[in-house]
Length: 303
Image (cartoon, rainbow, N blue to C red; front, side):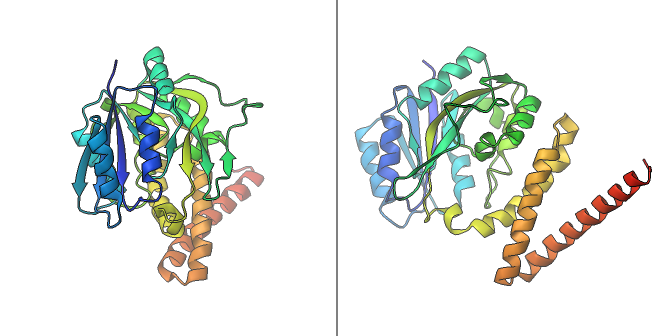
């Protein structure tokens, strides 16, 4: 049975951390290496991790000075020994058969990555589902895809785009991480996950939602949404410059990029962030200028 390394960066997650770890150790697939990376927590998180480590020999605990979730994941990858890798945030939950189902698919299909969906839970225990089991999206089919096919399909899907950039909800052959590291900045997954897709030979999609993404207002994305969005913009610009070179339609990614441009522009104006406001306004005006010129040329029959 293949060993699977599950990497959990931990930072001040004492409120939900125990539930997260329990959901992983109770997986029906048991050949796990559970790597907890304490990223300089100042609450009771380290003690919680140590308690679980003392009770389960599959758990490895590593402490480091706070450097962010990207470097914490890199540390976990470097010390892991599993054939396959998975990730979890320290406040999320695994359904009991999540690992088994993903492993079954990656072996059955001979793929390098298998992706699935998530659902969300707010702090009041209310659930939000992106997948309608009674009426699955017709353009999203359980199957095996080339990286180009998957990136095109996922970026056009209302459901899949929710988990497109996230590191979790996926099982990776560790070889796709060759020469790939998470950056030490916000929106680190937006800069990274598309590279992992393109490093793969084939990608499986499993039409299931067995990863629970907790809507925690104390989390990084919960408290820093605007700041995260400002990091998303250059990450999208890098992706847009690259993906057409490998045959991926850039139009869906460009639409998402424009959304973030306008979002950051509006918030920057509200909060008085002059630098961000000028930067995004310049880019929006340039896009509108050349879109207008293209429309005028088309109307006058200029190719």
